[in-house]
Amino acid sequence: MAGAVHWRYRFREIDSSKKDNLDRFIPNRSAINFGYAHNMLTEGAKKGKENLAEMSTYQKLLAEACDIPTRILAFKNKPPTPKEIWPPLPPPPPQCRSSKPKRHIPKTWERKLDAPYMVDDFCLNLLDWGSSNVISIALENSVYLWNASNSSTSELVTVDDEYGPVTSVSWASDGRHIAVGLNNSIVQIWDATTTKQLRTLRGGHRGRVGSLAWNSHILTTGGMDGKIVDNDVRVRSHIVQTYIGHDQEVCGLKWSPSGRQLASGGNDNVVHIWDRSVVSLNSPTRCLHRFEEHRAAVKALAWSPFQSNLLASGGGDNCIKMWNTRTGARLNSVDTGSQVCSLLWNKNERELLSSHGFTENQLTLWKYPSMVKMAELNGHTSRVLHMTQSPDGCMVATAAADETMRLWNVFETPLKTSDEPFAKFNRIR
Image (cartoon, rainbow, N blue to C red; front, side, top):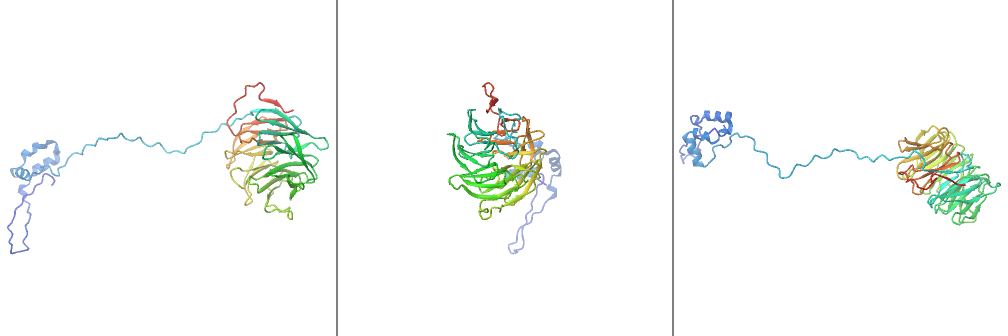
């Protein structure tokens, strides 16, 4: 046994003539100190060197002669824990999913402007915010410009009764030129900087022009006759393409961000997707997709800024529908509970804003793609017919049949309140 067991050896002489004779180690049990071994097992190493005196004379001589410690293989206590040179590291923080701070969404308007004689018509488009930070709004026979940078108001044009009322307005991408659609089928192009009319577009429609959409130098117009016309404003013969597919008035027009696809919504409850590479003068009825799932007039159209081929549409049937315009599949449909008049995407977050009619006349912010309602903004007392977005994507302007235009900071933190008197209430005219 360890430490306490020692062996005594007896040697035999080896006969060199016999190669198979080898030395043997024969243990001598009489030399084993069983008492010492038992004591070492029970008492342990606490007696230390005192036990050396109890060893036999032979064991002492053997240990001294071989210079071997007498406690070889003896049972010992565990070695002391080594001292740490460096302090222990703190435990790692618990793993958790980082979450963005919840954004505050103001529930009230920032500014309110009086807009008398606003025409209460679902199929018209009377509000637009240009890239130069100027809002154009049509009030009966006149078009007014409100500069959001300095809050100044000016009149662009007032047409005669035989031409009016104004039925649509739309800024070109340069923020300087603006198209004005009229009730008598004429479209005018104006320079807002010089307040001069540049040209008149005739012959495209047989009735009022209620919707407009720019695509570079092409101005697309939609009329009560159901026709959609591409006009090249650079050339004398401005009509370059005609789209035929709607049976009733065209209420909404929107070009995709790429400029390759055109979405149109009509009073016939139909949404068309037109592709410029497919439609030609010889096949004006050849649309890419025809969606017939709405049950009322479709005016609200909005292309997603972060996902190509994603279109949102809304109409008088209270529904918002999502479409994949590449495959033609409907991705989602949400019943909002009230007439959908306009739609806008948040340029910075996956959110969709809708404006509504009876009964709440509210704005509703939706989270995409879950379409969970994030907030409702109230203030208008009649249906919110028009909605447009500021160039930086933070502010939203709305115009309603209650003859007011309101500015909402729905996509960004609230603006600082102005120290000017009556800063929250202005008149357009």
